[in-house]
Amino acid sequence: SQQGEEDPQALSIQEGENATMNCSYKTSINNLQWYRQNSGRGLVHLILIRSNEREKHSGRLRVTLDTSKKSSSLLITASRAADTASYFCATEPYNTNAGKSTFGDGTTLTVKP
Amino acid sequence: DGGITQSPKYLFRKEGQNVTLSCEQNLNHDAMYWYRQDPGQGLRLIYYSQIVNDFQKGDIAEGYSVSREKKESFPLTVTSAQKNPTAFYLCASSPGTRSGNTIFFGEGSWLNVV
Image (cartoon, rainbow over all chains, first blue to last red; front, side):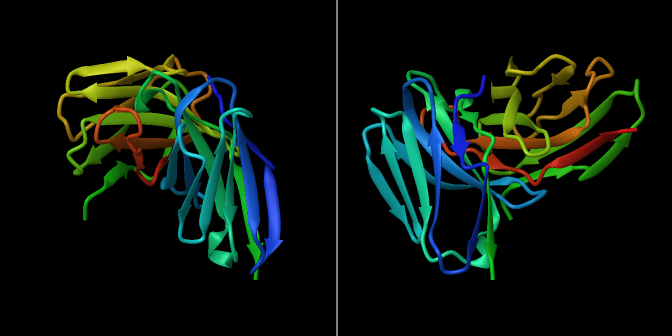
């Protein structure tokens, strides 16, 4: 059963601009993780945010979590052509474990040089 | 290099044939997973294993089988009972299934039924 839904499905921006993508989910969670996937490759973990956290940073990435709205956002600042990829959120339902994490359908980001 | 190795990268299969996808990890992780990804979509869990000789069905286990005889290995068999097997298959592992564990992925295997 799929819980997280990313929005928008596709995003195209110019190099240097910021990219924001969102993830909404339906039930309470332990944590939410963002992953990146280059075309035809495996997923790579970017960042984890726990349900008691509101914001986390990692390099050019900023993730926010609003548990009251059941939503998260991933902001990539000063984007580069190399950021072109699909980005997925994975939600771990409350009172379960990592084995129960579910992935959304992803946002495909294209950064034009 | 530590990581997860999937093979083959590309596989063609005739309808009615079973095929086995290999997944090996040298990360010393207890948990391993198989996901299916269809074009433009997210990942759906087929099976996962928390420990050797134990595994649980995920959301779309029908038509698939797995084994976990060794900690490092978690092969997936796509059987002829799987009606629409053409997809991208991703193997993954995590230190365990404790809450918050990061899932590490292999590079995937493309299966095309011809």
